[in-house]
Amino acid sequence: MRTVNEIDQVVDEKERDHRRFLKGASSVYTLGGYFPTELILFSKAKPVSLDWIKQVDSGSVLFFMSSYCSACHMEVMEDFIEEFPQFDYGIFYETSEEQFAEHTKPFLGKAHLYPCDLGRLKPQTQVNSVPYALVLNKMGQVTGAGVIGTDTEMQQVAYSLLAVYASNNDKK
Image (tube, rainbow, N blue to C red):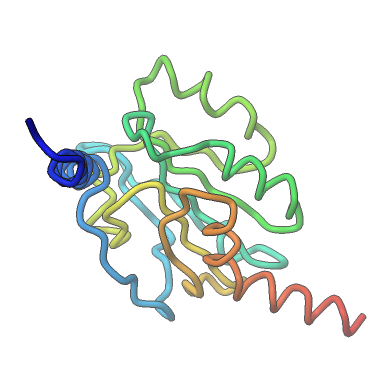
């Protein structure tokens, strides 16, 4: 018979292996660089323009999600977008064609929606895990990045954008 500690260790190892498969290796994103204004979302597809990220008034947030990820909670995105409608949003969502329209329906008119192959995006965006968000200033520079499994994590990732927006609005 195994002890509770031995069982916990086995469960921890299984969960860690599961998360590693699901989310990939997580690394620290280098802030300050410009996000590409063109991405190829699928192999053998034409590039998609993201010029809008440099034409925003207050900055933008890019979400990277997958329907195949148990840690990806659409509610985190939905809550943030509802609370901060002044920003522009892009959602890169990996799922089947059939599920894309259904899963992204709450974001119609609120975000730029992109079905994608996250494996194809990885070398172009340096995003190697999900759920993930990149926060961009209005010039398209990455000012925040991180895993966003909860509302609190999302607020932490977006802190720089929220602080600048609050500061600019206090002056008015």
